[in-house]
Image (cartoon, rainbow, N blue to C red; front, side, top):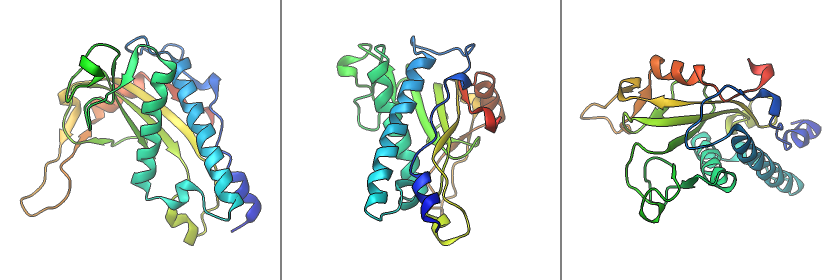
Length: 214
């Protein structure tokens, strides 16, 4: 592995303010500036962590963790960061409650097991085909990113910095999900996937698109 490339990859790509959609429709008084601030918080966090790891000869966080675990970290960070900048939203305090972000003061102790009020947040390396556990009527916001994976360490894939590629979001209906279920012998987790209709709603209401990735 080229040391200079690995060191450069420790510095994530900055969020470009010019690549947000000024015409986007967002719920609960959330603004693109607040979303941008949360994304930048994650960039700062990851840059600091990876810089410290590199100084100690340890691989970057995204190269260390299983892909699903790293995606979970991205999503959980954003869920925690948005309320820091947006006074109208809070993190749902119910363990594994749905959705992730709910209107501040709308529920007792800002906690609800399940509601259609709020925003569900996901982070993914994939531009579509996102999954959930159930078909949900919810405002879904997906943060799409690009970065290395652990398997890249043993291949010819060059080190590359983390960067956000897109943020898409829209109000989805149950018919915008396809319930996949599972067979009686399968051990696969039951999931539902966003359909073409759901994806199109979100793509039409895109929030952020890195210009060079369009």
